[in-house]
Image (cartoon, rainbow, N blue to C red; front, side):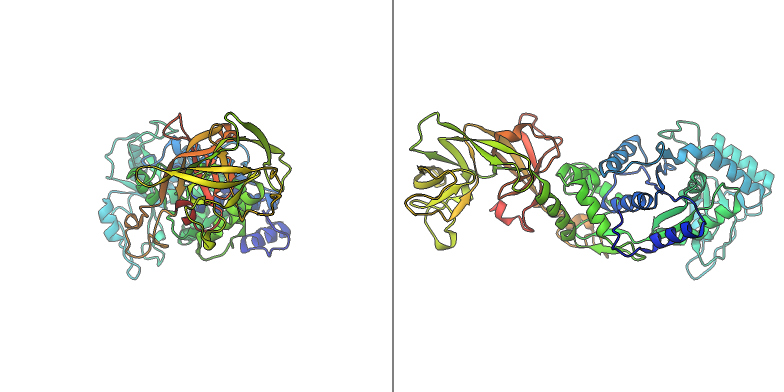
Amino acid sequence: MADDNKPLNFIQQAISGDLGTGAITKIVTRFPPEPNGYLHIGHAKSICLNFGLAQQFGGNCHLRFDDTNPEKESEEYVQAIIKDVQWLGFQWHGEVRYASDYFDQFYAWAQHLVCEKKAYVCQLSSEEMRKNRGTLTAPGTNSPFRESSVEESLELLEKMKDGDVAEGSMTLRAKIDMASPNISLRDPVMYRIKKMPHHRAGDKWNIYPAYDFAHCLEDAIEGISHSVCTLEFTSNRPLYDWFINSLPVPSKPRQFEFGRLNLNYSVTSKRKLKQLVDGNYVDGWDDPRLPTISGLRRRGVPAVAVRNFCDSLAVAKTDGLVDLSQFEFFIRDELNKNAPRAMAVLHPLKVVITNLPEGHLEQLPAPCHHELQLGDRNLPFTREIYIDANDFKEEYSKKLNKKLSPGRRVRLRHCYVIEADDYLKNETGDVIQVNATLVSETLGKDPIDGIKPKGVVHWVSATNCVDCDVYLYDRLFSDPLPDSGDKDFLEMIEKESLKILTNCKAERSLADVEIGVPYQFEREGYFCKDSHSGDSKKIVFNQTIALRSSWTDILS
């Protein structure tokens, strides 16, 4: 993770100082997602940071699920998150951990706080608690149950656990300070009644710990040395410290907050992402237009590009908004260096090379990459080929002098020079076929008559190719800040964010490529085979990213 020439950020400085003074002998970090949705690019920054810190300082990083809310969590999300972390290239220390592993310990510590008169069972409704909580400028009001006896609270807590009282009728609250200027300290709820099964614990529990109660205790149980959170948890730190200092925990982690990663033209709220999925605005959590890690993977974005992008970002004490083009730079940079090359024609136009015999087949070698030693691939060259319709013009123009037109020449990429003779149209006036002549002895050479072609076009054999559909993706939102202010982010959805091109033609070699592995379709962009296309008989290629920042040339 660390660049030796890059100044240490404030978290690295703190870790270095703690190791230097002997305050700790080994760094232990954790990535603690809630399994209530799929991970997105913002989580990728946190993953890279936490695992990167452990790698840099020779420590360990845990993967732990904060699964304290069975109402919104599922095993599907757990498995998706595990896959995402592994895909990004990280391996956690030991087994996967869960907050639910510690439910018995949490309950015992809750009883301990009641016995120490630092917690009580409150019978106010949620609405009554909200009214009594106060405001940012006015203190809260003590609950009438605040001074209940230890015995009464312990008895009621047991009934809550056993399912003997109704949901919403009671909560366990910490007894801190209803007049605190920090609203998080105004007797926060520690346990709520939820009579529903847990995806791991089953039907054992009728009460579940609040996130703010469990989160810091999980860190203490696991010996986390540096608890790295995003800025929205800054106001919760005094509460975490109160729980840690009030209980006989085995260790005392230190919390550090850093700024979240936000991308323009995107939303990175799991709640809003779920709205997009549940409302069928997108094709599931792994829709390639979403900033989810699974969406990026399905789109063909390399994991190393995500890591490089995240490592390039500042770890600061303020939230940051990053332009999407900055992320796209890292994607293009990685793909340009490492993606194998191939050819596909997105708008096929048949060309018949009339001076070649029927059945002509010639295997022409072409490099799989212009720099990497990946060897050659064979291009079957036949009498009938496809070029892109955009590469043919009925009339010659100086502005379009690199196009094929009657009496003009182009070079077929990795192949011969051809000259257009005439063309055929259908009833609606569309050009459906070009008749051309192969200029002899021009494989890798200029024509001997000295008339050099101005342009180079890509092509595939018409009889030795693969039929495919190509999905072109643009930004999902038309507004750079779709969820800012009073905007309804759903109204900002770009209706043209997906274009489906059917009946495209690709090199025969692309028929059996691995799903998700990006290729550069020469002159078109970067694409990968889709992981779940709708028609199993038709190959679907997803556009990873255009060669440049605009996709208008592909669509025209």
